[in-house]
Amino acid sequence: MLRLLKIRGHSLSPDFREGEYVLTAGFPSPFRKIKAGDVIVFHQPGYGLLIKRVRRVLDGGASFEVRGTQIESTDSRNFGPVPQTQVAGKVIWHIRRK
Amino acid sequence: MFHKITEKLDQQFHFNAVDAHCDIPCGIYDPHQAQIGALTVIRMVDLIENLLKEHGDSLNAELLNSMARYVAVKEEHAELAKHEIRVIWGDFIKDAHLEKYPQLHGLVHKIMQLGSKARQTVDRETAVALLEAINEFAVIFWQIKGIDTKRAKSPYSVSEDVVLPVL
Image (cartoon, rainbow over all chains, first blue to last red; front, side, top):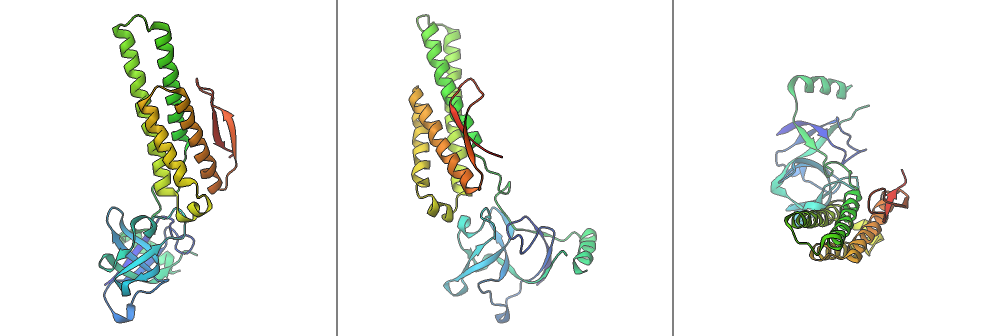
């Protein structure tokens, strides 16, 4: 499933800035295997729908260690690895503001 | 161009937001509240001791009422100081900070213990030690933020030193 989402917050700034948009692909596909460096969207209990960059793929893709770019970013340092079941999609297009 | 088109579409269709989440409020942390908590504990100890010195030989309802209020405020503010430090320690401090300041865990533990002791006792020395430990934490906190600090006498009824950011 494709979704167009608007970025809110500064955790991935300056790579992904507040007010920019991302198109995500949510359907499972061997061609869309998630790897380190990919930016994913996932449901995190207590936080809602989050966007972060994958730092490490754990247990052959069963979960992902995610990071923001800011030291204050709320990411796997706070809530641990993100299980694959919580991943809603991978960013396939970043619509930047000029 | 794509951004402008998407923005127009967003105004019409209201796309869902995805959070690039920092802790809310993003990056807003300050040990100031903890320092105020510790200063208040010192002030309450002073008030309790003064009350006993001046009216200790005449037990009455007014004295008991004042004493109860001072103790309640002392309890509340010692806990406030502990809470504020715990939030910064738990949410703001990251592994990289701990590598640079390996004394942080021990210092936070010391603050927790002093905060508890300040609740259990009416001991000015403990209350001042609590403030001093929080000041030490504040120095590290502002160093992490890249902001210089200075020591200054607090402008309140308790004239102990507090560490302040030089903004």
